[in-house]
Image (cartoon, rainbow over all chains, first blue to last red; front, side, top):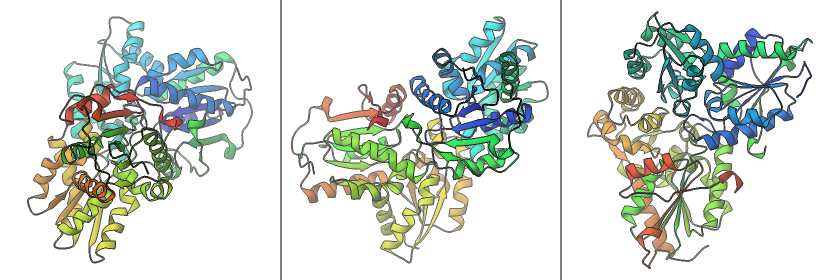
Length: 273
Length: 273
Protein backbone atom coordinates (compact mmCIF):
# COMPACT_ATOMS: atom_id res chain seq x y z
CA UNK A 1 0.00 0.00 0.00
CA UNK A 2 1.18 3.49 -0.85
CA UNK A 3 0.57 5.19 2.48
CA UNK A 4 1.51 8.64 1.22
CA UNK A 5 -1.53 10.65 2.23
CA UNK A 6 -0.82 13.27 -0.37
CA UNK A 7 -0.53 10.77 -3.23
CA UNK A 8 -3.26 11.05 -5.88
CA UNK A 9 -6.37 8.90 -6.37
CA UNK A 10 -6.26 6.92 -9.62
CA UNK A 11 -9.57 7.09 -11.50
CA UNK A 12 -10.16 5.20 -14.74
CA UNK A 13 -12.84 4.64 -17.32
CA UNK A 14 -13.20 3.20 -20.81
CA UNK A 15 -13.28 6.79 -22.10
CA UNK A 16 -14.62 10.15 -21.10
CA UNK A 17 -17.76 9.05 -19.24
CA UNK A 18 -15.83 8.49 -16.01
CA UNK A 19 -15.17 12.21 -15.87
CA UNK A 20 -18.66 12.45 -14.33
CA UNK A 21 -17.26 10.40 -11.45
CA UNK A 22 -14.05 12.45 -11.31
CA UNK A 23 -16.24 15.57 -11.17
CA UNK A 24 -18.07 14.25 -8.10
CA UNK A 25 -14.76 13.46 -6.39
CA UNK A 26 -13.53 16.98 -7.17
CA UNK A 27 -16.72 18.43 -5.68
CA UNK A 28 -16.94 16.24 -2.60
CA UNK A 29 -13.27 15.62 -1.80
CA UNK A 30 -11.82 18.97 -2.86
CA UNK A 31 -8.46 18.34 -1.18
CA UNK A 32 -7.66 15.14 -3.07
CA UNK A 33 -5.43 14.92 -6.11
CA UNK A 34 -6.59 12.83 -9.09
CA UNK A 35 -4.84 10.96 -11.89
CA UNK A 36 -7.50 10.17 -14.50
CA UNK A 37 -7.05 7.66 -17.30
CA UNK A 38 -9.56 7.27 -20.19
CA UNK A 39 -9.08 4.33 -22.55
CA UNK A 40 -10.23 6.30 -25.59
CA UNK A 41 -8.31 4.10 -28.05
CA UNK A 42 -10.37 1.04 -27.06
CA UNK A 43 -13.67 2.60 -25.92
CA UNK A 44 -16.39 1.36 -25.41
CA UNK A 45 -16.19 -1.54 -22.97
CA UNK A 46 -19.94 -2.06 -22.69
CA UNK A 47 -20.25 -4.43 -25.63
CA UNK A 48 -17.04 -6.37 -24.95
CA UNK A 49 -16.35 -9.63 -23.14
CA UNK A 50 -15.35 -10.11 -19.53
CA UNK A 51 -11.93 -11.47 -20.53
CA UNK A 52 -11.15 -8.44 -22.70
CA UNK A 53 -12.39 -5.89 -20.16
CA UNK A 54 -10.33 -7.61 -17.47
CA UNK A 55 -7.18 -7.54 -19.63
CA UNK A 56 -7.66 -3.84 -20.36
CA UNK A 57 -8.40 -3.02 -16.71
CA UNK A 58 -5.24 -4.81 -15.55
CA UNK A 59 -3.12 -2.77 -17.97
CA UNK A 60 -4.67 0.44 -16.67
CA UNK A 61 -4.13 -0.54 -13.04
CA UNK A 62 -0.46 -1.21 -13.86
CA UNK A 63 -0.22 2.24 -15.46
CA UNK A 64 -1.89 3.93 -12.47
CA UNK A 65 0.55 2.21 -10.11
CA UNK A 66 3.44 3.84 -12.01
CA UNK A 67 1.76 7.12 -11.06
CA UNK A 68 2.09 6.22 -7.35
CA UNK A 69 -1.62 6.45 -6.61
CA UNK A 70 -2.77 5.73 -3.06
CA UNK A 71 -6.14 4.27 -4.12
CA UNK A 72 -8.03 3.43 -7.30
CA UNK A 73 -11.60 4.21 -8.36
CA UNK A 74 -12.98 2.15 -11.23
CA UNK A 75 -15.22 4.85 -12.68
CA UNK A 76 -16.60 2.59 -15.39
CA UNK A 77 -19.67 0.49 -14.59
CA UNK A 78 -18.71 -2.20 -17.09
CA UNK A 79 -15.17 -2.57 -15.70
CA UNK A 80 -16.59 -2.50 -12.15
CA UNK A 81 -19.03 -5.27 -13.06
CA UNK A 82 -16.65 -7.46 -15.08
CA UNK A 83 -13.13 -6.91 -13.69
CA UNK A 84 -13.18 -5.46 -10.16
CA UNK A 85 -13.69 -8.73 -8.27
CA UNK A 86 -10.59 -10.25 -9.83
CA UNK A 87 -8.41 -7.15 -9.63
CA UNK A 88 -9.27 -6.62 -5.96
CA UNK A 89 -7.61 -9.93 -5.17
CA UNK A 90 -4.52 -9.08 -7.21
CA UNK A 91 -3.48 -5.67 -5.92
CA UNK A 92 -2.22 -4.20 -2.70
CA UNK A 93 -4.06 -0.88 -3.03
CA UNK A 94 -7.53 0.08 -1.82
CA UNK A 95 -9.83 -0.08 -4.82
CA UNK A 96 -13.46 0.89 -5.29
CA UNK A 97 -15.92 0.53 -8.16
CA UNK A 98 -19.13 2.40 -8.97
CA UNK A 99 -21.47 -0.59 -8.83
CA UNK A 100 -21.39 -1.36 -5.09
CA UNK A 101 -22.06 2.23 -3.91
CA UNK A 102 -24.92 2.58 -6.41
CA UNK A 103 -26.44 -0.74 -5.37
CA UNK A 104 -26.30 0.11 -1.64
CA UNK A 105 -28.05 3.43 -2.05
CA UNK A 106 -30.73 1.90 -4.22
CA UNK A 107 -31.45 -0.65 -1.48
CA UNK A 108 -31.92 2.20 0.99
CA UNK A 109 -34.07 4.20 -1.44
CA UNK A 110 -36.63 1.64 -2.52
CA UNK A 111 -39.93 1.33 -0.67
CA UNK A 112 -41.75 -1.18 -2.85
CA UNK A 113 -38.64 -3.36 -3.28
CA UNK A 114 -38.61 -3.01 -7.07
CA UNK A 115 -35.42 -1.54 -8.48
CA UNK A 116 -34.59 -0.92 -12.14
CA UNK A 117 -31.05 -0.80 -13.55
CA UNK A 118 -30.15 0.75 -16.91
CA UNK A 119 -26.62 0.06 -18.12
CA UNK A 120 -24.53 -1.32 -20.97
CA UNK A 121 -25.14 -4.76 -22.38
CA UNK A 122 -22.12 -6.26 -20.57
CA UNK A 123 -23.05 -4.73 -17.20
CA UNK A 124 -26.62 -6.04 -17.47
CA UNK A 125 -25.44 -9.51 -18.50
CA UNK A 126 -23.04 -9.62 -15.54
CA UNK A 127 -26.07 -9.44 -13.19
CA UNK A 128 -23.79 -7.77 -10.62
CA UNK A 129 -26.25 -5.06 -9.56
CA UNK A 130 -28.85 -7.74 -8.94
CA UNK A 131 -26.41 -9.95 -7.02
CA UNK A 132 -25.25 -7.13 -4.75
CA UNK A 133 -28.74 -5.77 -4.13
CA UNK A 134 -30.19 -9.17 -3.30
CA UNK A 135 -27.25 -9.88 -1.00
CA UNK A 136 -28.37 -6.86 1.04
CA UNK A 137 -32.09 -7.61 0.76
CA UNK A 138 -33.22 -10.85 -0.90
CA UNK A 139 -36.80 -9.59 -1.09
CA UNK A 140 -35.91 -6.92 -3.63
CA UNK A 141 -36.58 -7.68 -7.28
CA UNK A 142 -34.14 -6.11 -9.78
CA UNK A 143 -35.10 -5.41 -13.39
CA UNK A 144 -32.19 -4.77 -15.74
CA UNK A 145 -32.35 -3.15 -19.17
CA UNK A 146 -29.41 -2.64 -21.54
CA UNK A 147 -29.59 0.76 -23.25
CA UNK A 148 -26.86 0.67 -25.92
CA UNK A 149 -28.09 3.78 -27.75
CA UNK A 150 -27.81 6.14 -24.77
CA UNK A 151 -24.03 6.60 -24.97
CA UNK A 152 -23.97 7.45 -28.70
CA UNK A 153 -26.98 9.75 -28.21
CA UNK A 154 -25.16 11.62 -25.43
CA UNK A 155 -21.99 11.78 -27.52
CA UNK A 156 -24.02 13.14 -30.45
CA UNK A 157 -25.09 15.91 -28.03
CA UNK A 158 -28.79 15.00 -28.27
CA UNK A 159 -29.37 15.00 -24.51
CA UNK A 160 -32.64 16.96 -24.80
CA UNK A 161 -33.73 15.78 -28.22
CA UNK A 162 -37.14 14.39 -29.17
CA UNK A 163 -35.42 11.35 -30.70
CA UNK A 164 -33.69 10.62 -27.40
CA UNK A 165 -37.05 10.95 -25.64
CA UNK A 166 -38.50 8.32 -27.97
CA UNK A 167 -35.54 5.97 -27.43
CA UNK A 168 -35.74 6.44 -23.66
CA UNK A 169 -39.50 5.79 -23.62
CA UNK A 170 -38.87 2.55 -25.48
CA UNK A 171 -36.10 1.44 -23.11
CA UNK A 172 -37.93 2.47 -19.93
CA UNK A 173 -41.37 1.11 -20.87
CA UNK A 174 -40.77 -2.39 -19.56
CA UNK A 175 -39.23 -1.08 -16.32
CA UNK A 176 -42.19 1.24 -15.72
CA UNK A 177 -44.58 -1.65 -16.37
CA UNK A 178 -42.84 -3.47 -13.52
CA UNK A 179 -43.73 -0.55 -11.22
CA UNK A 180 -40.12 0.21 -10.15
CA UNK A 181 -39.75 3.02 -7.60
CA UNK A 182 -35.95 3.35 -7.93
CA UNK A 183 -33.75 3.47 -11.04
CA UNK A 184 -29.96 3.12 -11.04
CA UNK A 185 -28.21 5.02 -13.84
CA UNK A 186 -25.63 2.26 -14.28
CA UNK A 187 -23.39 3.85 -16.92
CA UNK A 188 -21.32 6.98 -16.48
CA UNK A 189 -22.90 8.79 -19.44
CA UNK A 190 -26.46 8.39 -18.20
CA UNK A 191 -26.47 11.17 -15.57
CA UNK A 192 -26.11 13.52 -18.54
CA UNK A 193 -29.63 12.36 -19.50
CA UNK A 194 -31.01 12.93 -16.00
CA UNK A 195 -33.45 15.73 -16.92
CA UNK A 196 -34.86 13.75 -19.82
CA UNK A 197 -35.15 10.54 -17.79
CA UNK A 198 -36.85 12.42 -14.97
CA UNK A 199 -39.46 13.74 -17.40
CA UNK A 200 -40.34 10.21 -18.56
CA UNK A 201 -40.19 8.57 -15.12
CA UNK A 202 -42.17 11.22 -13.24
CA UNK A 203 -41.44 12.33 -9.68
CA UNK A 204 -42.29 8.98 -8.04
CA UNK A 205 -39.13 7.19 -9.14
CA UNK A 206 -35.86 7.83 -7.26
CA UNK A 207 -32.93 8.23 -9.65
CA UNK A 208 -29.65 6.85 -8.28
CA UNK A 209 -26.41 8.32 -9.65
CA UNK A 210 -23.55 5.96 -8.70
CA UNK A 211 -21.02 8.72 -9.45
CA UNK A 212 -22.12 10.75 -6.42
CA UNK A 213 -22.47 7.67 -4.22
CA UNK A 214 -18.98 6.54 -5.22
CA UNK A 215 -17.45 9.85 -4.13
CA UNK A 216 -19.10 9.36 -0.74
CA UNK A 217 -17.87 5.78 -0.47
CA UNK A 218 -14.38 6.94 -1.40
CA UNK A 219 -14.51 9.57 1.32
CA UNK A 220 -15.46 6.97 3.94
CA UNK A 221 -12.77 4.59 2.70
CA UNK A 222 -10.01 7.20 2.90
CA UNK A 223 -11.16 8.22 6.39
CA UNK A 224 -11.17 4.62 7.61
CA UNK A 225 -7.68 4.06 6.23
CA UNK A 226 -6.37 7.40 7.47
CA UNK A 227 -5.48 8.29 3.90
CA UNK A 228 -7.09 11.73 3.54
CA UNK A 229 -4.83 14.28 1.94
CA UNK A 230 -3.69 16.83 4.54
CA UNK A 231 -1.37 18.95 2.40
CA UNK A 232 -2.16 21.71 -0.02
CA UNK A 233 -1.57 20.93 -3.67
CA UNK A 234 -1.02 23.76 -6.18
CA UNK A 235 -4.03 23.98 -8.52
CA UNK A 236 -2.00 23.29 -11.65
CA UNK A 237 -0.68 19.96 -10.33
CA UNK A 238 -3.83 18.72 -8.69
CA UNK A 239 -5.50 16.92 -11.58
CA UNK A 240 -3.62 14.95 -14.21
CA UNK A 241 -5.33 13.45 -17.28
CA UNK A 242 -4.18 10.62 -19.51
CA UNK A 243 -5.81 8.94 -22.50
CA UNK A 244 -4.86 6.12 -24.87
CA UNK A 245 -5.96 7.89 -28.06
CA UNK A 246 -4.96 11.38 -29.17
CA UNK A 247 -6.21 13.96 -26.72
CA UNK A 248 -8.12 16.60 -28.71
CA UNK A 249 -11.55 14.98 -28.43
CA UNK A 250 -10.91 13.99 -24.83
CA UNK A 251 -10.11 17.58 -23.92
CA UNK A 252 -13.16 18.91 -25.74
CA UNK A 253 -15.50 16.61 -23.82
CA UNK A 254 -13.67 17.17 -20.53
CA UNK A 255 -13.92 20.92 -20.94
CA UNK A 256 -17.66 20.61 -21.51
CA UNK A 257 -18.31 18.87 -18.19
CA UNK A 258 -15.53 19.93 -15.80
CA UNK A 259 -15.62 23.31 -14.10
CA UNK A 260 -12.25 24.38 -15.51
CA UNK A 261 -10.19 24.06 -18.70
CA UNK A 262 -8.05 20.99 -19.36
CA UNK A 263 -5.08 21.46 -21.64
CA UNK A 264 -2.38 19.11 -20.43
CA UNK A 265 -3.81 15.66 -21.14
CA UNK A 266 -1.10 13.20 -22.21
CA UNK A 267 -1.47 10.22 -24.52
CA UNK A 268 0.10 6.98 -23.33
CA UNK A 269 0.52 3.57 -25.07
CA UNK A 270 -1.66 1.53 -22.71
CA UNK A 271 -1.09 -1.72 -24.62
CA UNK A 272 2.48 -1.69 -23.34
CA UNK A 273 1.54 -1.81 -19.66
CA UNK B 1 4.38 -10.95 -53.07
CA UNK B 2 2.80 -14.27 -52.27
CA UNK B 3 2.20 -15.54 -55.79
CA UNK B 4 0.35 -18.65 -54.68
CA UNK B 5 -2.84 -18.40 -56.68
CA UNK B 6 -4.69 -20.59 -54.25
CA UNK B 7 -3.69 -18.55 -51.19
CA UNK B 8 -6.57 -16.79 -49.42
CA UNK B 9 -7.59 -13.14 -49.60
CA UNK B 10 -7.14 -11.34 -46.27
CA UNK B 11 -10.17 -9.19 -45.38
CA UNK B 12 -10.27 -7.05 -42.26
CA UNK B 13 -12.57 -4.65 -40.48
CA UNK B 14 -12.89 -2.96 -37.09
CA UNK B 15 -15.55 -5.54 -36.23
CA UNK B 16 -18.39 -7.38 -37.90
CA UNK B 17 -19.45 -4.72 -40.43
CA UNK B 18 -16.82 -5.84 -42.93
CA UNK B 19 -18.66 -9.13 -43.25
CA UNK B 20 -20.92 -7.27 -45.71
CA UNK B 21 -17.80 -6.87 -47.86
CA UNK B 22 -16.75 -10.49 -47.34
CA UNK B 23 -20.26 -11.51 -48.37
CA UNK B 24 -19.92 -9.65 -51.68
CA UNK B 25 -16.55 -11.31 -52.32
CA UNK B 26 -18.11 -14.72 -51.59
CA UNK B 27 -20.93 -13.96 -54.04
CA UNK B 28 -18.88 -12.46 -56.83
CA UNK B 29 -15.59 -14.39 -56.52
CA UNK B 30 -16.94 -17.77 -55.44
CA UNK B 31 -13.65 -19.58 -56.07
CA UNK B 32 -11.57 -17.44 -53.72
CA UNK B 33 -10.64 -18.37 -50.18
CA UNK B 34 -10.97 -15.71 -47.45
CA UNK B 35 -9.29 -15.12 -44.09
CA UNK B 36 -11.43 -12.57 -42.26
CA UNK B 37 -10.29 -10.62 -39.21
CA UNK B 38 -12.64 -8.46 -37.09
CA UNK B 39 -11.08 -6.25 -34.41
CA UNK B 40 -13.99 -6.74 -32.02
CA UNK B 41 -11.88 -6.01 -28.91
CA UNK B 42 -11.18 -2.46 -30.12
CA UNK B 43 -14.23 -1.68 -32.25
CA UNK B 44 -15.28 0.94 -33.37
CA UNK B 45 -12.63 2.79 -35.36
CA UNK B 46 -14.95 5.53 -36.61
CA UNK B 47 -14.47 7.85 -33.64
CA UNK B 48 -10.73 7.24 -33.22
CA UNK B 49 -7.66 9.11 -34.43
CA UNK B 50 -5.64 8.49 -37.58
CA UNK B 51 -2.58 7.46 -35.54
CA UNK B 52 -4.53 4.87 -33.55
CA UNK B 53 -6.36 3.43 -36.57
CA UNK B 54 -3.03 3.19 -38.41
CA UNK B 55 -1.38 1.36 -35.50
CA UNK B 56 -4.28 -1.11 -35.28
CA UNK B 57 -4.33 -1.65 -39.07
CA UNK B 58 -0.59 -2.38 -39.14
CA UNK B 59 -1.01 -5.04 -36.44
CA UNK B 60 -3.82 -6.66 -38.43
CA UNK B 61 -1.80 -6.62 -41.66
CA UNK B 62 1.04 -8.34 -39.80
CA UNK B 63 -1.39 -10.99 -38.55
CA UNK B 64 -2.85 -11.53 -42.04
CA UNK B 65 0.64 -11.99 -43.45
CA UNK B 66 1.18 -14.87 -41.02
CA UNK B 67 -1.86 -16.43 -42.72
CA UNK B 68 -0.02 -16.31 -46.08
CA UNK B 69 -2.67 -14.22 -47.82
CA UNK B 70 -2.07 -13.30 -51.47
CA UNK B 71 -3.87 -9.94 -51.24
CA UNK B 72 -5.59 -7.78 -48.62
CA UNK B 73 -8.95 -6.02 -48.67
CA UNK B 74 -9.43 -3.27 -46.09
CA UNK B 75 -13.16 -3.79 -45.59
CA UNK B 76 -13.47 -0.90 -43.14
CA UNK B 77 -14.14 2.57 -44.53
CA UNK B 78 -12.42 4.29 -41.61
CA UNK B 79 -9.24 2.19 -41.94
CA UNK B 80 -9.34 2.68 -45.72
CA UNK B 81 -9.61 6.44 -45.24
CA UNK B 82 -7.06 6.81 -42.45
CA UNK B 83 -4.49 4.04 -42.86
CA UNK B 84 -4.47 2.59 -46.39
CA UNK B 85 -2.25 5.23 -48.02
CA UNK B 86 0.54 4.59 -45.52
CA UNK B 87 0.20 0.81 -45.44
CA UNK B 88 0.27 0.57 -49.24
CA UNK B 89 3.77 1.99 -49.20
CA UNK B 90 4.92 -0.41 -46.49
CA UNK B 91 3.85 -3.81 -47.76
CA UNK B 92 4.71 -6.06 -50.70
CA UNK B 93 1.21 -7.42 -51.18
CA UNK B 94 -1.59 -6.10 -53.40
CA UNK B 95 -3.99 -4.19 -51.13
CA UNK B 96 -7.35 -2.59 -51.78
CA UNK B 97 -9.69 -0.46 -49.66
CA UNK B 98 -13.41 0.19 -49.95
CA UNK B 99 -13.17 3.97 -50.43
CA UNK B 100 -11.61 4.13 -53.90
CA UNK B 101 -14.04 1.67 -55.58
CA UNK B 102 -17.01 3.46 -54.01
CA UNK B 103 -15.73 6.87 -55.08
CA UNK B 104 -15.15 5.76 -58.69
CA UNK B 105 -18.63 4.34 -59.12
CA UNK B 106 -20.20 7.44 -57.61
CA UNK B 107 -18.35 9.59 -60.18
CA UNK B 108 -19.83 7.45 -62.96
CA UNK B 109 -23.30 7.52 -61.42
CA UNK B 110 -23.83 11.22 -60.84
CA UNK B 111 -25.51 13.36 -63.47
CA UNK B 112 -25.84 16.66 -61.64
CA UNK B 113 -22.32 16.38 -60.15
CA UNK B 114 -23.57 16.48 -56.56
CA UNK B 115 -22.57 13.48 -54.47
CA UNK B 116 -23.37 12.85 -50.82
CA UNK B 117 -21.27 10.68 -48.50
CA UNK B 118 -22.52 9.25 -45.21
CA UNK B 119 -19.86 7.67 -43.01
CA UNK B 120 -18.24 7.68 -39.57
CA UNK B 121 -16.89 10.86 -38.07
CA UNK B 122 -13.26 9.92 -38.81
CA UNK B 123 -13.98 8.99 -42.43
CA UNK B 124 -15.81 12.27 -43.02
CA UNK B 125 -13.05 14.29 -41.37
CA UNK B 126 -10.42 12.56 -43.53
CA UNK B 127 -12.08 14.10 -46.63
CA UNK B 128 -10.80 11.12 -48.63
CA UNK B 129 -13.99 10.48 -50.58
CA UNK B 130 -14.01 14.14 -51.62
CA UNK B 131 -10.32 14.07 -52.57
CA UNK B 132 -10.63 10.94 -54.71
CA UNK B 133 -13.86 12.06 -56.39
CA UNK B 134 -12.53 15.49 -57.24
CA UNK B 135 -9.34 13.94 -58.57
CA UNK B 136 -11.50 12.12 -61.13
CA UNK B 137 -13.78 15.09 -61.80
CA UNK B 138 -12.99 18.46 -60.20
CA UNK B 139 -16.44 19.78 -61.13
CA UNK B 140 -18.18 17.44 -58.72
CA UNK B 141 -19.20 18.79 -55.33
CA UNK B 142 -19.10 16.32 -52.44
CA UNK B 143 -21.24 16.75 -49.31
CA UNK B 144 -20.18 14.65 -46.33
CA UNK B 145 -22.27 13.85 -43.26
CA UNK B 146 -21.11 11.86 -40.24
CA UNK B 147 -23.87 9.53 -38.98
CA UNK B 148 -22.56 8.14 -35.67
CA UNK B 149 -25.93 6.71 -34.58
CA UNK B 150 -26.39 4.44 -37.60
CA UNK B 151 -24.01 1.70 -36.41
CA UNK B 152 -25.53 1.38 -32.91
CA UNK B 153 -29.04 1.48 -34.43
CA UNK B 154 -28.14 -1.38 -36.78
CA UNK B 155 -26.53 -3.30 -33.93
CA UNK B 156 -29.67 -2.76 -31.83
CA UNK B 157 -31.52 -4.46 -34.69
CA UNK B 158 -33.68 -1.39 -35.39
CA UNK B 159 -33.07 -1.39 -39.15
CA UNK B 160 -36.76 -0.79 -39.98
CA UNK B 161 -37.74 1.14 -36.87
CA UNK B 162 -39.59 4.45 -36.75
CA UNK B 163 -36.83 5.87 -34.52
CA UNK B 164 -34.20 4.99 -37.12
CA UNK B 165 -36.38 6.68 -39.77
CA UNK B 166 -36.39 9.87 -37.67
CA UNK B 167 -32.61 9.73 -37.14
CA UNK B 168 -32.01 9.11 -40.86
CA UNK B 169 -34.31 11.99 -41.85
CA UNK B 170 -32.32 14.27 -39.57
CA UNK B 171 -28.96 13.12 -40.96
CA UNK B 172 -30.05 13.17 -44.61
CA UNK B 173 -31.95 16.48 -44.54
CA UNK B 174 -28.94 18.64 -45.28
CA UNK B 175 -27.76 16.34 -48.07
CA UNK B 176 -31.20 16.38 -49.69
CA UNK B 177 -31.28 20.17 -49.43
CA UNK B 178 -28.09 20.18 -51.50
CA UNK B 179 -29.95 18.26 -54.23
CA UNK B 180 -27.53 15.30 -54.35
CA UNK B 181 -28.35 12.65 -56.98
CA UNK B 182 -25.90 10.02 -55.64
CA UNK B 183 -25.24 8.85 -52.09
CA UNK B 184 -22.28 6.71 -51.01
CA UNK B 185 -22.98 4.43 -48.03
CA UNK B 186 -19.49 4.95 -46.64
CA UNK B 187 -19.60 2.58 -43.66
CA UNK B 188 -19.97 -1.18 -43.83
CA UNK B 189 -23.07 -1.26 -41.61
CA UNK B 190 -25.06 1.18 -43.72
CA UNK B 191 -26.10 -1.20 -46.52
CA UNK B 192 -28.14 -2.95 -43.82
CA UNK B 193 -30.21 0.28 -43.75
CA UNK B 194 -30.60 0.36 -47.54
CA UNK B 195 -34.39 -0.15 -47.59
CA UNK B 196 -34.97 2.56 -45.00
CA UNK B 197 -32.59 5.00 -46.70
CA UNK B 198 -34.23 4.35 -50.07
CA UNK B 199 -37.62 5.25 -48.59
CA UNK B 200 -36.34 8.61 -47.37
CA UNK B 201 -34.26 9.44 -50.43
CA UNK B 202 -36.86 8.47 -53.04
CA UNK B 203 -36.06 6.79 -56.36
CA UNK B 204 -34.09 9.72 -57.83
CA UNK B 205 -30.96 9.21 -55.74
CA UNK B 206 -28.50 6.46 -56.70
CA UNK B 207 -27.28 4.54 -53.66
CA UNK B 208 -23.67 3.38 -53.94
CA UNK B 209 -22.61 0.33 -51.90
CA UNK B 210 -18.80 0.24 -51.79
CA UNK B 211 -18.93 -3.42 -50.65
CA UNK B 212 -20.17 -4.58 -54.05
CA UNK B 213 -17.87 -2.22 -55.93
CA UNK B 214 -14.91 -3.46 -53.91
CA UNK B 215 -15.60 -7.07 -54.85
CA UNK B 216 -15.57 -5.99 -58.51
CA UNK B 217 -12.32 -4.06 -58.09
CA UNK B 218 -10.78 -7.06 -56.35
CA UNK B 219 -11.80 -9.28 -59.26
CA UNK B 220 -10.13 -6.93 -61.77
CA UNK B 221 -7.01 -6.69 -59.61
CA UNK B 222 -6.62 -10.46 -59.30
CA UNK B 223 -7.14 -10.87 -63.06
CA UNK B 224 -4.54 -8.23 -63.87
CA UNK B 225 -2.02 -9.86 -61.55
CA UNK B 226 -2.86 -13.40 -62.70
CA UNK B 227 -3.77 -14.27 -59.12
CA UNK B 228 -7.20 -15.84 -59.53
CA UNK B 229 -7.61 -19.08 -57.67
CA UNK B 230 -7.70 -22.03 -60.09
CA UNK B 231 -7.93 -24.88 -57.62
CA UNK B 232 -10.90 -26.28 -55.77
CA UNK B 233 -10.99 -25.67 -52.05
CA UNK B 234 -13.07 -27.95 -49.77
CA UNK B 235 -16.03 -25.99 -48.40
CA UNK B 236 -14.98 -26.40 -44.78
CA UNK B 237 -11.56 -24.82 -45.33
CA UNK B 238 -12.59 -22.03 -47.65
CA UNK B 239 -13.46 -19.31 -45.18
CA UNK B 240 -11.58 -18.71 -41.93
CA UNK B 241 -12.70 -16.18 -39.33
CA UNK B 242 -10.69 -14.50 -36.59
CA UNK B 243 -11.62 -11.87 -34.01
CA UNK B 244 -9.80 -10.07 -31.21
CA UNK B 245 -12.59 -10.41 -28.63
CA UNK B 246 -14.38 -13.61 -27.64
CA UNK B 247 -16.25 -15.06 -30.58
CA UNK B 248 -19.85 -15.66 -29.47
CA UNK B 249 -21.23 -12.28 -30.52
CA UNK B 250 -19.14 -12.29 -33.69
CA UNK B 251 -20.59 -15.64 -34.70
CA UNK B 252 -24.14 -14.54 -33.92
CA UNK B 253 -23.86 -11.48 -36.17
CA UNK B 254 -21.99 -13.42 -38.87
CA UNK B 255 -24.65 -16.10 -38.93
CA UNK B 256 -27.32 -13.42 -39.36
CA UNK B 257 -25.79 -12.02 -42.55
CA UNK B 258 -23.79 -14.83 -44.18
CA UNK B 259 -25.54 -17.57 -46.16
CA UNK B 260 -24.14 -20.36 -44.00
CA UNK B 261 -23.32 -21.10 -40.36
CA UNK B 262 -20.02 -20.03 -38.81
CA UNK B 263 -18.80 -22.03 -35.88
CA UNK B 264 -15.02 -22.06 -36.08
CA UNK B 265 -14.05 -18.43 -35.43
CA UNK B 266 -10.83 -18.15 -33.43
CA UNK B 267 -9.84 -15.39 -31.03
CA UNK B 268 -6.32 -14.00 -31.41
CA UNK B 269 -4.35 -11.50 -29.30
CA UNK B 270 -3.98 -8.80 -31.95
CA UNK B 271 -2.03 -6.47 -29.64
CA UNK B 272 0.88 -8.87 -29.89
CA UNK B 273 1.28 -8.55 -33.67
